[in-house]
Amino acid sequence: MNKKYIIAFDQGTTSTRTIIFDSQGHIISISQKELTQHYPNSGWVEHDPIEIYNAQKDTFASVLKDTGIDAKAIAAIGITNQRETTVVWDKETGEPIYNAIVWLDNRTKDICEHLKNEGLESYIHKNTGLVIDAYFSGTKLKWILDNVKGARQKAEAGKLLFGTIDSWLIYKFTNGKQHCTDHTNASRTMLYNIKDLKWDETLLNALEIPKSMLPDVKTSSSYFGSVEHNGTAIPICGVAGDQQAALFGQGGSVEGIAKNTYGTGCFLLLNNGKDYVASENGLLTTLACSLPNKHIDYALEGSIFIGGASIQWLRDKMQIIDSAKDTEHICNSTPALKDLYVVPAFAGLGAPYWDSNAKGAIYGITLDIGKNEIIKATVEALAYQTKDVLTAMEEDTGKPINTLKVDGGASSNNYLMQFQSDLLNIPVDRPKMIEITALGAAMLAGLHAEFWTNNDINTIREVDQIFTPKIDSETRRKKYKGWLNAIKRTQTTNES
Image (cartoon, rainbow, N blue to C red; front, side, top):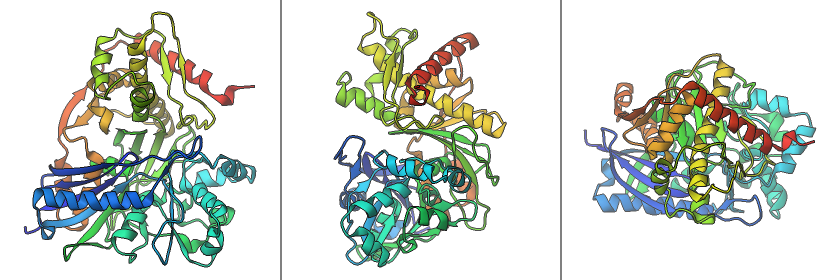
């Protein structure tokens, strides 16, 4: 085989990376650049789309230069990206007309309220699988058209294009030849009908969005154009939003597989097969990675807005840890907590509560509580939030989840993974290679490029450690009851 490697572009919320994988799925090289976060107003979060593109371009060049690998040896590129983050750019110049509005941004709450007042809540839930929330791309796109001078006129004249970050990168890397996305990213816009698999006219009209702005939607393992590097054209053959890519990398093309990614947020996905299940418990229904000549799989998803971001808060704002890695030792050396809970609702509460007005809170502080106890309670909050979502999934499907597969940065914390298993009372399965999101994108690209077969990708994932429950049922019940009480006190929907 003259093609020896697959590349993944992994464009996340806090950094942009390029990773080279070999035919065994092992990492050969990673290049990474931190991404500047812009906070123009309270609750607003933006990125510079040009910075994202340049960082992706630079890390791509860097891994090839550092390894000395010839572009001719790269079989294909897969792209995985932060979802819902919204970019609008000029069709003629290729320049963005405004910063990217990040998924965490909640400036469009008023637009969301308007949609609810118009009676669209049920329609949106039934046809997009989503709830009305500032989290999704549709209201962000409307905000840009309404607030950037001249934007709406240019959009209606067919001169503006919209995309999530995958579409933006594809457009730039193919020199404007391709304006497309995949099923997973389209399903996160609140504009895509996941039953009919097409852009939803009712919602485009409600948000006053011209259809000419929207990208073509393809299966996740498809040809998305080519990237030129030193005279060699490397095909982009796989695209998926980061959480669906992680599910795919965890073997989640099979019905019944559940995974949780512990990143900036935490995202729990369950492949529910070809059956569309509209959640009755505050979860989202979304599209799993799609393959050619195979039925579309639906997934249930619980989005926890603040996961690893709460550990960053401890480091950067509270300044009580030097590094996220310090938390494991602190948790292990701090006695078991009694009735102390941190509810990290810094961007509101996500699934299954969906309370955008909630604020972060700490409950149970006494005179003997110090910084280490607060650190431990913040780490444990990741596990409690995960249990909230997993419980909702089991109620929606009527089926127990027997194992949770995990990935993302915080999954390297052994204390957290053991506490997660204790709380869920099921095994927690961590792979050796926790860069599973990038691997999922690489797998999608490798399949289309015929670099890998279905059998190959089923054997690439290797287990690092399986954590099994160690606490008794009464301790588990008491701990979770205390958490639910803390949540109840945090929710603004309970206020009179």
